Image (cartoon, rainbow, N blue to C red):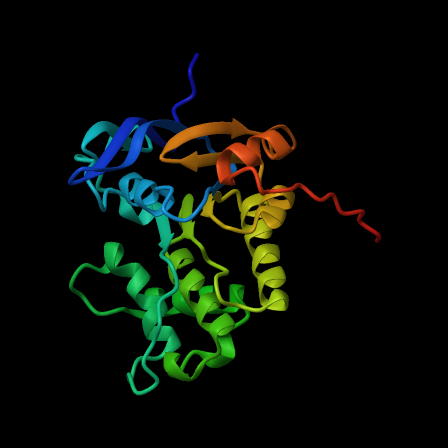
Length: 250
């Protein structure tokens, strides 16, 4: 019996005028997976993620969430989304807690957050270690702190599926390490299914359960040890790419 995927795209193609961005991409994500999507700049990664979320309508092909066509899907609280780096004006009078609360729009509609929602915001801030900054303006937080607030926003609705687009771009190595530790705990301890776009092949190889290599078409998809070979990466990024193994010393 075929298991219904949480997320699936079937023969998706996308064009902007005469430019082909995606071509015949088929991919399914099962419950509990941690999928990494890699590829060079301009390979269609962000476009594919937006198609998966229903933010873009493909030129051809179809996409579904939790077994439902995107056109009829309405259970948005079941998923969280963290877009590419968002900048905040230091003068903008919006606090960390207020940003996190925007992740509850699918639950709140047009009503104000009540005690239950405020408690969820506080819990999400605590999950990412930012509870002390609840009333701090976003614009004065560091880049790494802002990234944690954005993931708290994505998590506040208790999603079953979390999609992240370059979540560690422009943050330092220490912040990246703690961020991936956080993601690992969500996936392994809380059962959240994760899809992440990243340029960091080394981190992807260590963290995810499956890798999708995308360059307009889906070139390969499988376990990191099977997919991230010299030959596959040269095909994906060009012949100048070299795989350099690192010995881990505990």
